[in-house]
Image (cartoon, rainbow, N blue to C red; front, side, top):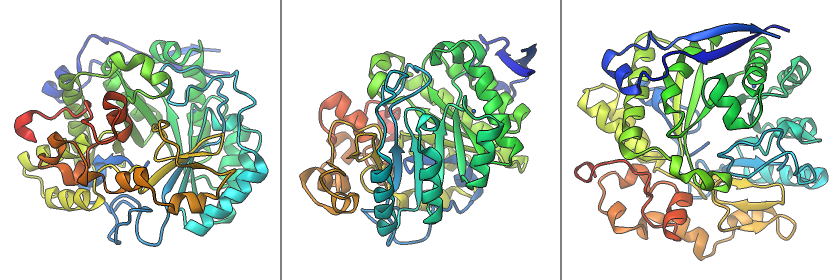
Length: 422
């Protein structure tokens, strides 16, 4: 089998250089013949006035779902087993955990609760979800109940047969992770041919006309590869990318020192903002999102206002209505042991276990913790409370607040705004 192998050339060329030149022509992909959430900021939608189906709707907002009469988006970590050993994995998954997965009968019962709560979307993750023995049974059941399904995968297992099954089940979206060029990705993922197999998985998805996009977690070590990633997307005709801010959860806590500095993140956000504007001007279908840091919303708005973009007013109103971080309100997660959390990063406080109470009852039960999450602005730290962007950030990510302060209302150090911008 012939697979394209990508390496970034001239990787010493910086993001800042690319911003200044507005081009990245010196960052090329070398092709060598050798024998795959609700806490998002959709930059493309903000710039283009697109009416995002979930995140920027006109319906009345809710503290117990994405909007009135709907439940939350559910991140369902159905297994802890994974065929890789990634350095940043928030669930600390690996191949040794092949006995830790969701019981099939209880999974079907849980889906009935999803239907009862009118859950709009289930994001199936893991571990690697495609290692789960009942994966296709679960997806089929979700689709029978008219619940949209996305999967978060490393793409390695997506061969022609798997991609055909995914297509036949009408999977709504496949998010596939890539961390840099071939050498960096393989080292970061702990497998010598991970990159090549992931690219092959992406191509198999595209052959079946499945909607596929990239997931890229930002670290000090890989932000230099972002221009390369955009060129990779153009070459492979991939139309969507989600940039995840690193969260110190699971194995991610072991590389907390790799969270980019304030200045590094600002340069990255400047760059992807320019890329989003560039694609918009080209009337491209490219979609750019950021995840797990609502400072991005405030930062993008400031840039849009400075650039006097006509879409600024729309963007401001949309983000204010969304209300910033929505962990425990419009999103939750359920792990392989049937524990429920406010999101996939917040394992420090379990809302309940499905073996003891139904998901429906746990989600609607009110206690001091969940009430605090759903009314977080009232108890947030003084720095955030005094910030003019609180309505579109809501104190940022609770998982980081807790990691740094042992308090969900503490200051999230991943905020990269200057004091005078707050």
